[in-house]
Each structure stands twice: as C-alpha cells, then as structure tokens.
Image (cartoon, rainbow, N blue to C red):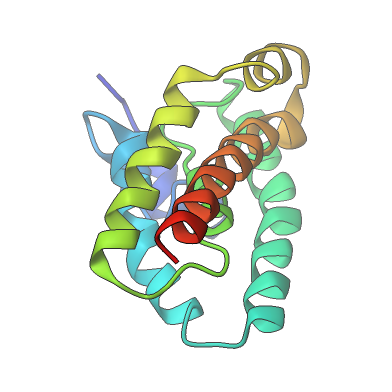
Amino acid sequence: MNKAPASVWRNPIHFLAFGLGSGAAPKAPGTVGTLAAVPLWYLMAQTTLPVYLCLTLIAFVIGIWLCGRTSRDLGVHDHGGIVWDEFVGYWITMIAVPVDWVWALLGFALFRLFDIWKPWPIGPVDRRVHGGLGIMLDDVLAGAFAALVLQGLLWWWG
C-alpha cells in the first residue's frame, strides 16, 4: 500500500515528482501515474516532433532534479509515489506515434510491461544507479524499449 506524505499537497516540488498528485494513489501508483501522463501526451502530441522532443528532454532533465530532491526530502530512494519518471517514460514511448486511443493504449501497456519486467539492462540500471538520475533512467530505458516495439508495430502495419 502506497503511503503518500502530506508534503505532496503542500510542496510544489513533491507535487510534481508525485505526478501532479497521481502518485499518491494508494494502489498501483506507477500505473496511475502513467495514466495521468496520457492526457498530457495528447496535448504534447499536438505540437511538432521537434517541440515534442524538446519538451520530453526538458521534462527528463527537470525530473532528475525533482525526483532526486523529493527522494532526499522523504528519506526514501525512489518512493513508490514518485511517478514523474513514469510521465517521461510514457512520453518517450509515444514519440512519433499517431494520436489515436488504440496507440495510446498499446503504448501504455508496453511501457508498463517494460517498467515492471525490467529486462536487461533496465534491471541492473535500476539497482546500480542512484539519486534522481537513477529514478529517471530505468523508466527512460523502459520507454525506449516500448518505443522500439511500438515503432516496429507501426512499421509493420504502416
């Protein structure tokens, strides 16, 4: 059971790291956080690809700091409620994907699969890299794996 600290609702850094509060969900905060990333993806997908990529990169860089700071403040490395990394991982998954509910759902499922499964090298990275970068990096890799599969499916059905 996920226990979100009260600071999530008082501290804007914690609020962002907790995915606009979505990470405070008592069960499956990573899944809820990824769901919360979907409407933001929809808005981002209305931009050009270079703008989308820049926004995703900015979210990643800011996320290193947000997640690291929140982790230090809470005294827990990668608290289950820190889901900014899920936002960025999902946005990476959805790079250059058609804006359609089928692709959004498939991207969601693939990202969650790789984020939970953590195949090599995601698992070792998750265990060995610490701080804000460590929190972000395993989800970035899960997003990259999911993006490769999704792009392969797009090419196949192209």
